[in-house]
Length: 65
Image (cartoon, rainbow, N blue to C red; front, side, top):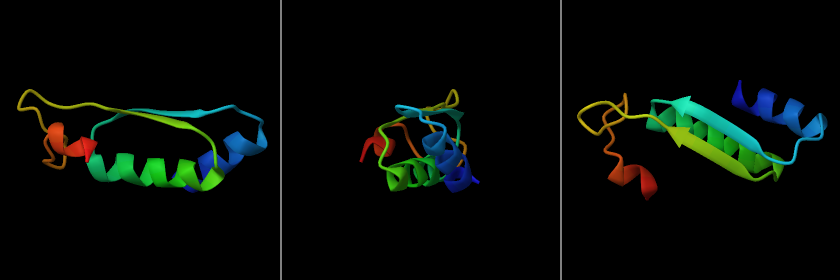
């Protein structure tokens, strides 16, 4: 799904892609990989819960590695 959307965006002539309000680290990683494949710059916004972790249990600190 991410590859298809990123491809459409590139074909549409966008300058960069923003993937936002993603609460799963794994999902954010997949989105970023798909965007990178297009060669476009990317911004990926992660959300976390009160415990400071993503939906799949990754700490916010660990998402920066």
